[in-house]
Image 1 (cartoon, rainbow over the protein chains, first blue to last red):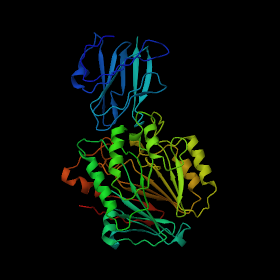
Image 2 (image 1 turned 90 degrees about the vertical axis):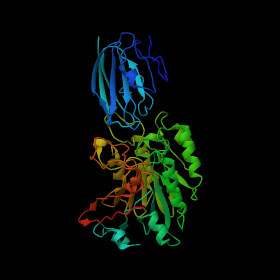
Image 3 (image 1 turned 180 degrees about the vertical axis):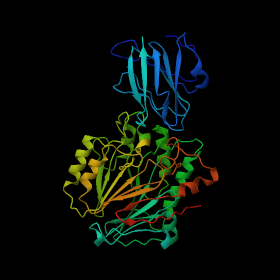
Image 4 (image 1 turned 120 degrees about the vertical axis):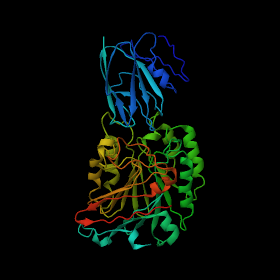
Length: 126
Length: 322
């Protein structure tokens, strides 16, 4: 996996998924520029968290695409997969990001474990 | 005490008229004094206590609820939450008769960071009242399921499960509940089966005339489920409490005063010491609400309470500290 973005801070974890392909985990303290830059030719998809909502609420991507959530609220939020299908984020403070790489094709529901009314869906196509 | 600063509530049609009446007072500012007198709770603002002096009898019990200190928060809505927390503590220390203990109804910190808990603990040392009972807010259990919180704040209680417990003071039975853990997608606050079973058993041996105080972070009534301001399985908890003549439920989380009376159960949410939140449904979302800096404290002090029970209307009068 190539990383060409100079993050201010970056945690990268290999994620174990039963199915293997999967997720890369980035947590960046700075976000604006990073969110719009393509990485390694893969399309970068951004989900903005604002007003206690994931926007867009449903995002369709290709397997291998990167997906980045960025929190624009003054309230911490998390990104947690329903059924633990991908690595959860830690609590994202204002302007913090969380990035994964889309795994195998399928539909992935997720929510904010701090404010569970906040839900979203990732659809991964082949 | 000024009469126009009272909420007088006649509940003599519901079988507890021998207790006289429930007198609740809307308050303003950063702390609420609850007085247990004859099994009913009376709340007053600290400013009023300081002004009027103690009115407690020797057998009375007074305790104080503080909530949502959010230590570590530094955004526009309040760039110095330690300062406003200190002001709250100063108010407590200025009381002519200190409360027997404090109850903190959660969100001690903003991000569950050890250094935030450290700051809170350091500040709390200046409080003359040393006994403090806690329940966690969702901000206190962000990354570790509440382990750090439990290690620090449950030392003086016999906590079970994820940190719930009960204790008795002056004949009043207090119950601290946890409703911020293992929340489900799309859901609200949650108590969970294990805690509900414990609660049912905990109440079993108590006489129906035992005054009960329940405290938890997220409201145990449906304040505004669209914003997650409620607890999905609170109805079951309340079903165990219905047989008691006097039940008071104290919550935080929503950073504003709301009160509701349902049968013998009075629900009450406290203000934050950190920042206000919008009234239910008046903004695109909940969360820290920015007000002009010079108005912050008075906005914290502005209290709007709307509630009624049966055909007894409750009057509410705001008062603030500024």
